[in-house]
Amino acid sequence: MLPALEISGLTKIYKGGFQALKGIDLTVKQGDFFALLGPNGAGKSTTIGIITSLVNKTAGNVAVFGHDIDQELEAAKSFIGLVPQEFNFNQFESLMKILVNQAGYYGVERKLAVQRAEKYLKQLNLWEKRNDAARMLSGGMKRRLMIARALMHEPKMLILDEPTAGVDIELRRSMWEFLRELNKQGITIILTTHYLEEAEMLCRNIAIIDSGIIVENTDMKSLLAKLDVETFVFDLKPNSEPQELVGLSSRVIDSHTIEVDVKKTQTINAVFTELNNQGIDVLSMRNKSNRLEELFVGLVGSGQAASKSAVKE
Amino acid sequence: MGSSRNIIALKSIMHKEIHRFMRIWVQTLVPPAITISLYFVIFGSLIGSRIGEMGGFDYMSFIVPGLIMMSVITNSYSNVASSFFSAKWQRNVEEMLVAPVPNWVIVAGYVGGGMARGMLVGSIVTLVSMFFVDIQIHNIWVIIVTVALTSATFALGGLINAIFAGSFDDISIIPTFILTPLTYLGGVFYSISLLPEFWQGVSQINPIVYMVNAFRYGFLGITDVSLTLSFAVLGVFIVSLYTIAMVLITKGIGLRS
Image: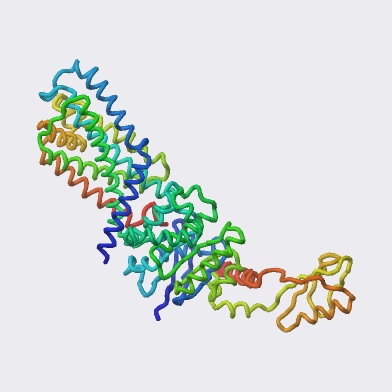
């Protein structure tokens, strides 16, 4: 089966000489839910811009469902639905007109476009606002409008650049459900996000990009398995006055909180045993940070170091 | 599949463009009617009555075609310039750029929108002028072809202006400093045969002279320049400006980084 997206040797040098992409390779399978992660300025939006032809590439190849963007750009574009990071619709147009016009650009007949607009506006809880100017919507509604717009031509691949930025938790979760449902229907989804929990919850495969280089490209399970150490925070009874734990890397935060780094080779039981030896009762425990976040920080840090050393060479 | 998709895309762009200027009709359709009424009152009735005949017609009848053409030129140009620049500024031009819309469809859609506004305003101004003067028609086909080609020319000019524009100021510079002087010196208010020989020669390099005169011929049957030459000038401008617009959009100037 042809991959949904195949990128090889993709390079972008902007005017002024800034190299945003340094020859990246990436393959996304059909039906995948794929995360593209990286810090600000890593090259995520440039990559998406090139795939969707909003940015001219300097070198390399991009094929969407087997259609090379240099040879068959229009065919490649017809497979993609884009939800960009920034609001980019006409703020003065009504939601209905924005959606119907967008469908028209893909050759969808007006009558069918109106039916689809109704379907997606209802699914995304925007139907009541269909005749309002887009500028009247809240931030969360504008994000949903951009998702509806990207679906109007029923693309086989949906690319979302930070789709839940600035969206409250409840709405974010309902958007996750919506995206999961689309993926179940067979739509390939590529997501960039700053919320690593979002990537961990939704995506099966992941690439981490840093300073224009792919520093990791694997499936989510394999990536999380690389995590050597997890840090747990233990909330203790008031005035427990804990001491550092023997045989474990730990830090006393205050009289009733202790942080412990638990290696893969160790068990959490060892922590409880040690605390028990000190006569301390545990009220609750939690992960200090998202597991993916810990990996991300490690990978991105090493990527930056590699990039800096390459520059020196 | 491709051609029917392109036709739907073209209709969508034109629908959007026409809806835009109709939605803000107070800004787009009413001002030309008011401005032209003032021209008729001041130049036609008050001053025109003292001028006497020009080219064998009373002054009011002489200036009507030029004033209609002036409205067509200004509105075709400004519609595309402001709409396309606004689409760039709000970034909703990306809606078209990410879609499988060929560049010629984008150009044709915006030019079609500009022509629609230019010709609608031209029709409104013609109706208003009928309150002041008896309109006579010498050759309707010359009128239709001239107004269509002229509005297409200036719509293309507006598009190129918007592609290069980096701010809203940039889309008012060319109309103010180039388009308005060329229009006023383009034989709208006078026959260029009244000018000294040197200035008659200078006027020959003003393309608007050819447009106004071809249009005036359609109404009154008189022209200062050859009709064939007028259509040739319009043809050359349309082909040149279309080619420039296509090259700019294909290269992504001002649109793609």
